[in-house]
Image (cartoon, rainbow, N blue to C red; front, side, top):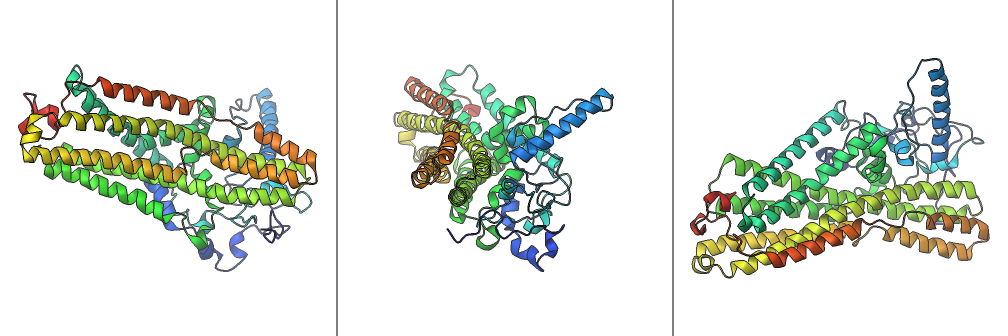
Length: 496
């Protein structure tokens, strides 16, 4: 690690206007894997016209912001401009602003050696800790983020939300005032909430990018689904040479969805006794697409987590090498922690949605299997027993595989272990350091950062409610997709 050049050690004092001309053929060697851009396209994450921006540290951005505000205030006095509504939120200034979306993305670094801000250089670090400026053509994203991508992604997400709302409202209306359908309603609701997670979170990210003020400032976690944030994460992974990290989890998250949803399609379209209609076919296809979005979301979580592993190691090495230079080190530390805390909040929210759904799925599946063991037609009819056995296998397999893959992607039940490990390493550096005041300031900064939230507590509360509900089910319809065992109930109650 000591031999690794850090923070501009070999950076030119005055980079050329276009890095493409620096080394012939650099384009191809620096291009990131196309599969990454395809994943972002499939997830409808593209929104901004430009996804690679000039990079400035928070101090430099605040200086620019205050200067612009001063000019706008002067213009208002002359009745030339409306008041500015932009916030000083670090994540909004870093990832949502358009003031630096110019063709010359090296303008931040194109200043003299004497006046260069080294914290701004840090924002261009590659996997070896060397500032490496790039543009959209270099990494290959230009052809994927075409004009109109933002509008297209918003329209597709709104369409997805509409489809999910329809599929959530129809069962609710069908099962309204039918106490014997409560168990079936919970099963359907668990699935709808689960597959609705990504489209709704992505829409929140679009709202934050669009408004940048007011309520959107409270969606700091939504920055995780901003392509600009993901590109910054990718620059720490040496993607041109090593490719995407964790291809095994990508194959697992996509492959298990195809297998499970293929099984579901076969069950609904071939094994069951219910009629095949255009609605059931469309519902099956939509379910496969939404579940694939979920699978790719878990890979995005793994991608970001792996990136932080690499970045935090580089930051520790930089702090050790630049011991005593408080301004630079605090700037690098706080910029890193701002991005990391954003990821932690996102994972907390995601876990608060997923874990209660998993608990409810376990409770409802276990309750259903128990009640099925007492239904005469299931015991006596082999065909009905086969259908119900397949439904049971589908429910348990889906629940177990979802839990395992999500925990593998997250690295445990919470993502804050990254910050905990970093803090422990920082304490070790403090014990070995020569500047006690310097390390004490850094440790104090870490202690004042976010200490978690009540989201996990809310998750546990809903989970307990789900377990309690499992003991209250009685006189439920538990035989589904079998018209010959309708128990004097209408066909729509077992085939919807």
